[in-house]
Image (tube, rainbow, N blue to C red):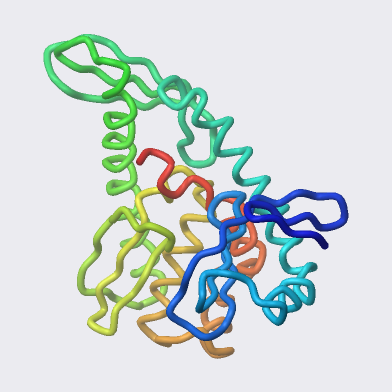
Length: 239
């Protein structure tokens, strides 16, 4: 393994690197896109901290390859972000038409957005995300009501939000938050997240008892977790 100020090379693979100062007296490694971010107390790498990176090359390679794949998917999507989008896991064409007021229509593989004026290119992305948020709110509200009745677990309030990283959350007050980006993944994955959060009304943790409860209604939850991890790149795509 070799290292420069802005790159790390492992087994011939060059990984973009950013070293920054942190508040902890230990090394923290995370990925931002395809860039490995390393936090140290001093903002530089001591010989001991360099050895720490060497000892964790397997972890770095594994996560870099995953992040690089997500980064490439994100870049391909962004190239056509005003012409197409993902709805329920399927790529659909987006068309803008002029009409009396703002409205939208989604059918099969086409999303039509109507506006009273010609939409400038810079505003199209915002309009698409607004429409997706509305579709998500309607779908997720209906879905959680269905699974609430089926599981016998009842929540107090639902909010469909723009989470930065999480797909969903559940509070001790029985309020559930769901990420509107769930409208972009397959419906079965969105259902898994809904069931996952409802189960937190019974178990406010990720104990074996919690996963057993999830498995009662979603037996293949491990596969769903993996697939959602692979779709993490869509969160924040319209920001």
